Picture 1 (cartoon, rainbow, N blue to C red):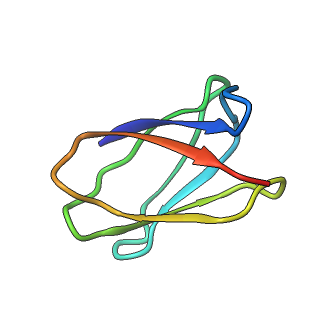
Picture 2: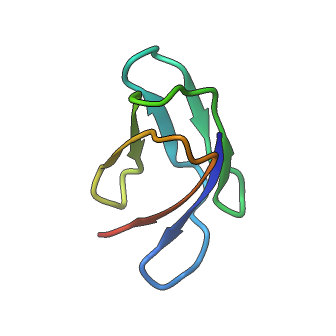
Length: 71
């Protein structure tokens, strides 16, 4: 699955750690906030960046996600 991580003002957030809590797989967003990670439905993804609150989602059948991180 893939997706994009943005801040509340709409700009991409680079360097966000994306962790699949079920498998331990990790990914990091690129300079535009884009990420790709192998995950299955029902897996829990955690998005962590020191400047923002941690964000968690449960993976569904969707293959693309837009995440907005809040301070």
